[in-house]
Image (cartoon, rainbow, N blue to C red; front, top):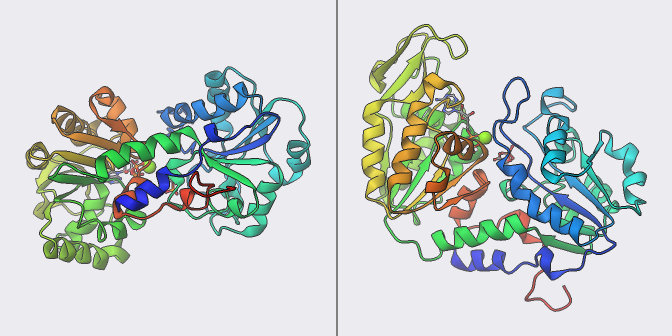
Length: 407
Ligand code: ADP
Ligand code: 3PG
Ligand code: MG
């Protein structure tokens, strides 16, 4: 694993090249948490990209084109997933005008021919079918508007998509942004010579995209602590009746395999023993704490209970390295946020090297007022779990390297 982290740290970064007069395309991760009124609830991911964007502005790049995804739109344009909701905040943070490119295809020649210092924000790249399919046609079109490609989307660097991976085939100069470098440095500290025991805490709702990773982390972790909607699938796999809780039925077998793998590697697994249940998420009338064996018909598990919090806190206390991704419940709703916030405080109180990752988890830590008490706040959720697996993340794989002549 360590050699792969070293390999990622060996990519060229923005400071190794000259962007003066160049058209720069920066892949950023502006997939920020947002409420139903389109208020950005945590703009950390936008702020995290500022050093790279400002560096290009300060070093007289001729144009800067920002490309990001936002959420997971299924069938083309959908207002809920428009990056327009982010444009104003970005302008405010950059203190610079940002031109919104609604239709990338139609505006391609304008972006490509730019000779003035301009900043463009392209509409959600996932509105294009080709993005997630890593379609070379889309990758080539993106490459055509720039001279330099900068990947600074650490949170998306585990995806092999057209704007994070495919584009590198068609651009001569491709480097990492400052955020990518900072993230890899922080993770190499935690993963290269980890001070054990190492605890991995997982939760959240992206079960299908994260659960399979868990089978491959057993050599690196000593304790696996599972909460949030992720734990619902495990509890159901163990025979508990989860009623209306969020469970991904197709992954029950994977959950069993994760538990088997943990047993084989003597990794201790901690699952909720009690949960907060509700009759409704949006209009809760009946909310109670029950043992996981007693979830009532028509109710859903939406947070870990107090006994679980105590169990998880004690397991964490004895760890020297802690990596956390995924909230313990629907923390966006006050009534269901206690488990996540209290766990944030429990981790923050430890003397361990602690990394928290993921857009929502980082948001929750900030809301819990514990941001300053973690060793590192990563912008990557799934990406940090894949790092833990020991893989080279696709977002780093094809970038120019400092150790290869001529690149
Ligand atoms: P991150 O963004 O940190 O990687 P995820 O996106 O995987 O985390 O998950 C965050 C989401 O998980 C939050 O929106 C939260 O409301 C949701 N969540 C957590 N626990 C539950 C649960 N028990 N039921 C439904 N949703 C949950
Ligand atoms: C995230 O929020 O974890 C990243 O932006 C990646 O999003 P994705 O899981 O939809 O690819
Ligand atoms: Mg999320």
